[in-house]
Image (tube, rainbow, N blue to C red; front, side):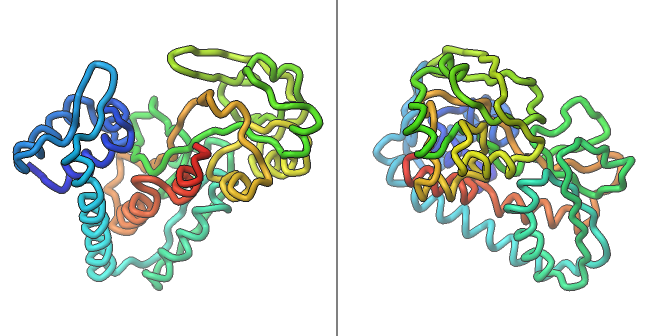
Length: 309
């Protein structure tokens, strides 16, 4: 048994209270997660989780084990990162594509820090919300939301959750009121991201109930930062993302709308050609980004601590 891998799985199960959700976030099956956790419990000689048909919860020993387990996994990741940086001489160009908002808000800073670790590396970041073919446009790595599951020529690795969140300014909500049900959005000005794959339909879920609400966009854009700025000005209710909205939500400049309803959860994924040998610089960059954003990215940590998500 790979004990470190099993510890990582235990942390994910503890975070999501679900074997299935943990498996989805790790990109493996529920059965494999369950198998590794059982092996870990056998190795430790202790039961870490209560299991029932409805939920998974930590035992008293599992709760006590979680904090040192998390610290050990993080130390191991940092150790791997130090070794990879010390032994690899990464040099030359590397072409990366990413969505505009994520590229400017988060990826640019991470790439700059990665380049400082490898002075001979020459990153080129192209930000574009269009789904460009990495083969045709010569990208070594594409960061996308959701990936391209129907393309056999690409490998995909999960980087971070991309959570949608509805929010609006206090001034807008004071003037027009807080909707209590998704169906009431038809009475509000909605700020709509035009690249959403479901068109002008916003999807909601709560306790097994699914709703699809057709909204009439009062303002639309293909750029999330444009919509975010419009929401700050009080223009309407925006279909935002936590990686963009976290600062203003934490500061109270924006308020969550319909917080009891969940929007579809997607992932940022790293896509790279399956037909080429993965170069050390591409692999090192992907590993760096995984360590940067997992298990919970900084923006969601802040919102979780404030009990906003």
